Image 1 (cartoon, helix red, strand yellow):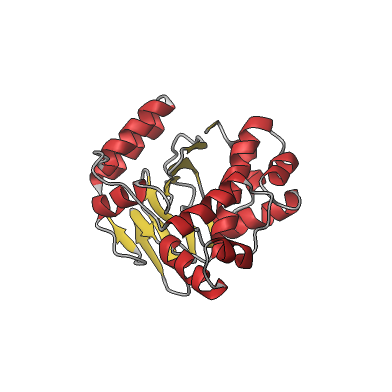
Image 2 (cartoon, rainbow, N blue to C red; image 1 turned 90 degrees about the vertical axis):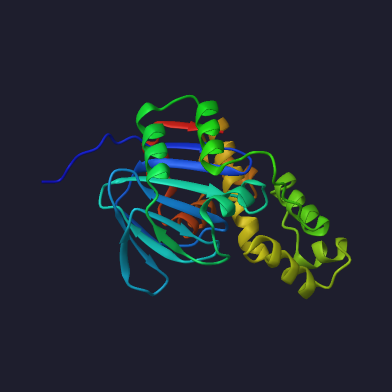
Length: 254
């Protein structure tokens, strides 16, 4: 007999991390531009990495740029994104002993219990942030410092999302050749420049959508050509149509 769980869809966004909860069935092949932690809140789920076989697990860490499919079969999906250009990334790697660009399937009872508590109790966003700080062991000891040339490029992407800065333009600003700039950018972010730019635009669009509740306006504000362009990019990165998510979302805070 299929066990039913409370089905709430919630999304919380901070500067260096984002947390999603919700019922999920199947997510098509997709790849994020940052590391993600998948958790089956009440039971295991299935995951397929690239062209590999389906595997069952309770927790999974998938590196940036890694194509994967997910099947939660109606279970509750907990998903934590850790931005590569934030100090949270260093705490995340330390807490879960992550190997660079390696997928990990594992069991972590503390993680599962903490996310289940957040999901069921639905506390204030500040409480959730504090819980995540404790979970990641954020003690103030770690500070991420990127190459200033790459940090400048990231700042431009986030500050002026509607501008299509070419790799040649950014390379020239950094006093680098385009090929050297692209190599250095991927070295510091784990993904190519264009994928990283699209990722940042997606989250800027989500923040705008939270404010204006209009997908077309949010898409344009974030640098997408129209709502269709945003939807295609969202599906490519998250494996699902954004309309499904935002029609059913119960709580959305940035």
